[in-house]
Image (cartoon, rainbow, N blue to C red; front, side):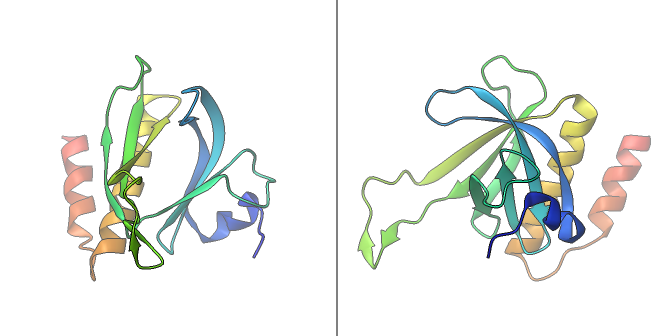
Length: 143
């Protein structure tokens, strides 16, 4: 099914612009990112694109954390397990983990994305999400 990034906004936990470092050339490019309620994280070249450039299945994600990447500020990475078998056969060429570097425009936006993605990963990989975690984090920020 082809749907524009903008059409996913209503179903999104969070959507907006981040910078994504390309895998080959390591160039930072502005991307429209959507974290969906069904545990997927998409990014598009623009809000009007119909097909995402890539998708992270958050059920396979292993984490999200702040990490300085190439001296750029407000950066974080999402890590995800790779498929180790293709059609039942081992895939020796695949690395065990994929690393997806992102950068936000400022520290506040970075923290917001970290919270949303972290919560989505926990929600996707467990049967229940305890809303108390959000209240504790909010209280710690206020205090």
